[in-house]
Image 1 (cartoon, protein in one colour):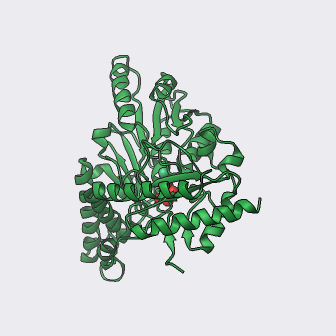
Image 2: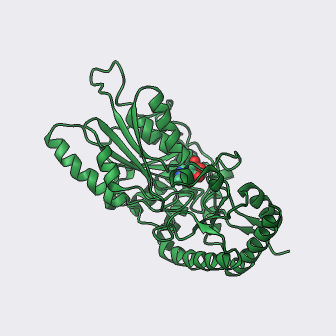
Image 3: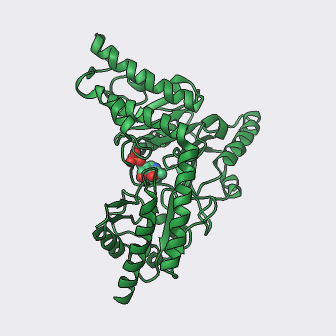
Length: 397
Ligand code: PLP
């Protein structure tokens, strides 16, 4: 059999060799606690400082605008609850507050929003259209006097559609000028850029963003480390408490090797963005052409234009995605049913449902995501196997 083919790069990526090399000294050689005063500690804090500086330089932002967290999930939670903590019942400045997000966010944004809803905050979930895009006019219409945060995913993790984040940023900036004149509180803008960093412009100032989340393991870096960019003067409160690490916003002894790896991976992503995008785009287009050649009934979920270059989300009518994933895995091909964290549960994808698919159609859909390590020869092999597998499964219906 051919070597296993990994088509699930939106779930996680292989750690780059250069990243591993950068991380290695921080396990058993330079293992100091960054808060310690002695030379072991100094080595560790110097590594974190260097990592922060690297990301700040690439992001064209301040050194202390970069907060390392334990994951992107944690960074999203910090952004949302950290803003919500400005508005507490009993606080004399308390005003009933309002958050805006979209129906196609990752669970690590949707669930914190639902938690806020349970304790009385008002949340608007802006819909997506059939192609998988959020309309700027829907965001604009949702803004109220007491809106405090807008959170829009940059590139969707299931169908790869890229949202008009820069335009939303500009709109909010314009609205904030008027709100300032009317003495209304500023609206903060957060984006979950986890799937975007490999392929899209992510410098926060260019996008007019106050809070931006990304993760190590989606960009050929390590798991268990994330990052939140926080623009200066954003009133963010910590959501966990302890020592004062990460400027008091994320206490806990830092994951030194992880932070070093995240920064190295981010540098490589910035440096190679165009090359990686073009490489996966050509392969992705070739794969799609071959899939439709072998399976005429295959349908693409989400727009072909305006989606991440490495993403396909395909519906094979009449074939359950669970059955297909298992059958493809037996043939050495790894694809997924959608978001990695929910793909073990057999719930239909909320993103596909939000774009108008029925639960049955959503459960006939698989996500195929290529990466920089996808080999050209894998495309033809995989398309043929997918075609043969679909034929076999169709005859079983
Ligand atoms: N946001 C998006 C868009 C994602 O795709 C993911 C991971 O699947 C996350 C957030 C969560 O990232 P992490 O695994 O670092 O918590």
